[in-house]
Every structure is written in C-alpha cells, then in structure tokens.
Amino acid sequence: MTDSAKATYAAAGVSITAGDEAVEKLKPWAAKAHRPEVLGGIGGFAGLFQLKLDRWKEPILASSTDGVGTKIAVAQALDKHDTVGIDLVAMIVDDLVVCGAEPLFVQDYIAVGKVDPDKIASLVKGIAEGCVQAGCALLGGETAEHPGLMGDDDYDISGTGVGVVEQSKLLGPDRVRDGDVVIAMGSSGLHSNGYSLARHVLLEIGRMPLEGHVEEFGRTLGEELLEPTKIYAKDCLALIAETEVRGFSHVTGGGLAANLARVLPEGLHATLDRGTWSPAPIFQLIAQRGRVEREEMEKAFNMGVGMVAVVAPEDVDRALAVLTARHVPSWVLGEISKAEVGGAALVGDHPRF
Image (tube, rainbow, N blue to C red; front, side, top):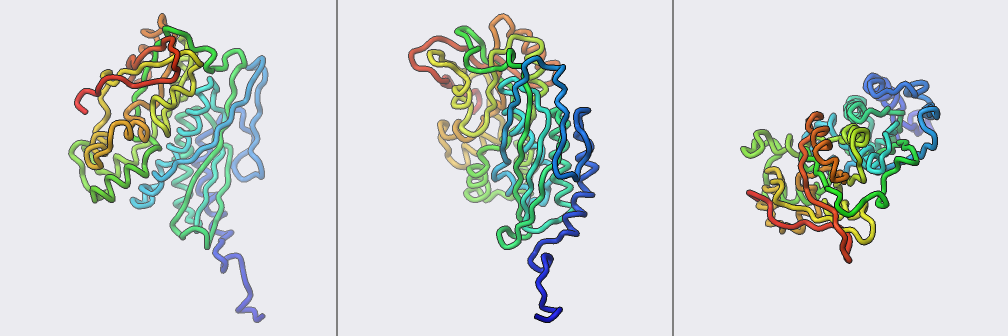
C-alpha cells in the first residue's frame, strides 16, 4: 500500500479535530448549567457530582432517560438547532419530578453523521438552557460521529438525568385519596410528542410550508412547531414545598388520561372536564386539516395540558396561587373519586374546539 492509499480515520469519515473543536465551542454553554456539587469540568472521562448527604436522611436516587423524537426533523429542515436541547431536558427532568425528585444533573448523547462544531454548540446551548430552567447541572455527555450510518446533516439527541428525593417524601399512587383535586398546568404547545402525526397532517396532507406565516399563531408554522417544551420541575418542587401534593403526572406520549392513570391506585378514578379549557390553535389546526378524531388527538397530543398535580382539596386555592405567582397557567381540571373501574377519563366538550 502506497502512502497515498493509506487509510485514515478522517478518510473513513470521522474527524478527531472537528470533535475537539466542538468540545471547545460547547464548553461555555455547558458551564452555564452548573451546581455547587459539580466537581471538575467538561472534558473528563466521567462527570463528578458530590452528593451532600447532610441534606437528606434517607435519599433515594431517581433516573430517567429520554429523547426528543421526530421534532428534530423540523429543527433540521429549518437549520435551527438551539431549542431542541430544551425539549430534551424537559422530557427528562419532568419525569423525575413526578416522583418528587429534585433534578441534580443531566448527561447528553449526541449522534451525528458528521461533526459540525457550530451545530453541536447550538444543540448544547439548548441543553444547557434547559438545565438552567430546571435547576440542574449539565454533567457532560458524548458526541458520536457515525459516517455511513447517518447522513452528514443527520443527528439525534438523547440524555439521562438523575434526581434525589427523601424517602418520606416520595410521591406515588399510594398517596392519592378519594376527594383529591386535579390541577392542570398549561403546555407551551405540542411539547415533544405527536410530531410524526403533526408533520404528516400539516406538511404532507396540508402541504403547509414551515416558513409560511399562520394567522392563528401570529408567527410561522416552523416557529410554532419548534416552540420549546415547558419545563415544570421548579414549579412542581415549589408546590411540594408549599402544599400537600399527592402526585404529579407528566403528560407525554399517550395523552392526558392515560398518563394520569399511571399515578392512580386501584379503586380510584379521575374525572377530567374538557370544558375547563380550550386547546391552543395548533391542536385545532391539526384536527381540522387532518380530520383527526378527538380520541386520536387526545392519545397523540397533550392538548394544552403539560403537567397535572393531584392535591389535597384543602390546598387547591394555595396551589393555584403558587402556580399563578410563578406565571404558570393553571386551573382545576377534575377530581378523584372511588370507582370499581380505575384510571382516568375526559368528559364534556372543549369550548370553541
């Protein structure tokens, strides 16, 4: 083999130099998502987090792993990559807080066809922003280059988060009681679920351009679809601190009723009133353009409710006041009652939908 024919890692599609440049570009963003328990910085073989056990008597660690799904296809089409990282963190930390856990740190995994340092930095910028909103640290991660497996412009992101909760404060179905009240927290839009259906309806059936202005939204379709997922972690922890919270449900894939049913014990049923809110225009547009039936909409999308809290009846007013002070749209959604058939069900009709 001649010198000119010698194989190299770069010739195979992997650039160590580009990877090193990406790490340098993302370091300033990662540094913004910090907690005092973090030891060292980005670039080591492992992230170090000093768990200060004097804060907890019987700490339980909680972990969650998730991704963003096909919302990434919208980001790629618009070449805008600095918000899907917020979505990633939201999917992780808001699953952690459902059991009462305070998110401590997140680690990300970015798979790319070819490393583009500026794109990687944009992705990490969003992840760091999400961590700041959640009050947790970004404790490093991994960027993997997959030439031949992914296209040069393709990427996917996922991550894992770890939180901690005192054993005596662990939330679960055993805490929910007959007569408890369900409080809804408004979503910021589609969040990060249902994008395969949304893209099929709006882009394929409706042939709507992502760059096109939509009067109902007051902005372009692409801007609406890339609206970052609302992160509720700090709001939920504030509710725990000031009210008697019996449980939370993060409304993701499967919809409102199915996700709430996951945190209810046998023998108790949640009745949720559609008449208490009207879904945002994005949900109405998808339903109309795709002729999507209500049952299918409610399985695929959050329909305007991103998180629910189950609270003691005597704490309803206080809970709503806490959320209002934190600028979280909230309202009484329904109630818990005894029933032979458990789970949760939506009743009534949405106004103006």
